[in-house]
Length: 193
Image (cartoon, rainbow, N blue to C red; front, top):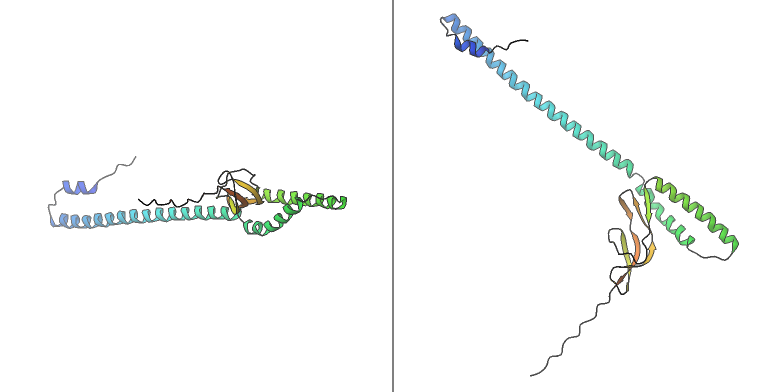
């Protein structure tokens, strides 16, 4: 183990006795001053290095997070363009038909529709269809119509399914909502005294 020697203390302990000693002390002071400056520079650049390293690491983490988000939601625009097609499938599949040929076509449409939904679910798309008598949720539903009812903010009819991609809302469900009719207040007649 190497012992550290404090040169400054040794120099202070010895009093310079001659000109040569004074000159050596001056030279030693200059060297110590340069050494202190070099140590300060080392500390400064070491701090700069660590700061740059941390900034680089933070940037890398942010870019990785942004890349994961971009990959996760890459199909959002595509799904948005598929929604009218899904709506068309839903409206066709709700139809009641008597003709056996048309029933066969509906079976084929149901098969294609289910396969399309399965592919979308594998990508993280989830359809949700609120039920009649559910409470209206403005975060996931869009009230496109209202009707008078006994309770306020209750779904009375569902027009179209809503869709989410992971946790992003692509389209809110389109519903009809009940509202309580507010009775008009009649102005009170003023009595003449």
